[in-house]
View 1 (tube, one colour):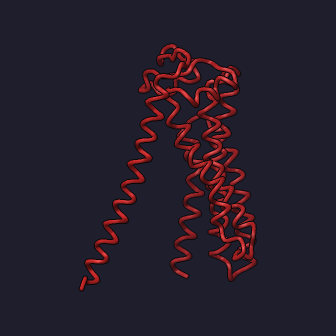
View 2 (cartoon, rainbow, N blue to C red; view 1 turned 90 degrees about the vertical axis):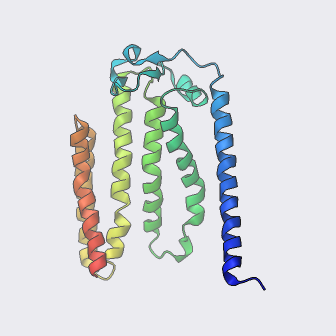
View 3 (cartoon, rainbow, N blue to C red; view 1 turned 120 degrees about the vertical axis):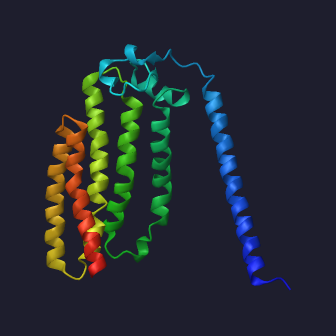
Length: 229
């Protein structure tokens, strides 16, 4: 007679081996794709000193910069190796997964307030979409003006997840206090609008990060309220 502990151990071992097999398969596919990309005929990549001045924001990335490109050439850069490829795919793959899987997994029929599900969906998409566009088209032939527009779009994506992602938290925390809930939501939206303006007009990364600080504090205070309540 096989004991319960042995059965549990066998099940866990099989689960572990299955998960390991999936990761090995995914890793093998990824390495194959990267190996194939290494032999695709992309343009001649630039070193840091030869790259456009507005792209020289990280002196520790010495090479792998794409030359100034058209929209079509920027999209083509999805299929050869360069120093932004990782940033593009690490945001692009989650973006596609969120687009496909989130609408299927949000229990819409059980949500009485539909906009909570909608803002949660948009909050998940915003930073991924902004970052994909920024990293993919940052070397666009439009130059520095286009680059700064894309950077603002990327920052807006981060602001949107901070803003939209907190609305369900505020709503649920104050669910039993409708008046306070409405006032809190309006105040948070107004303050978030100001934070977005400060973030996209900031002249340094430090000031940009400070724009998000109060939002983090606001959300943290609501988590504390939920714990006290």
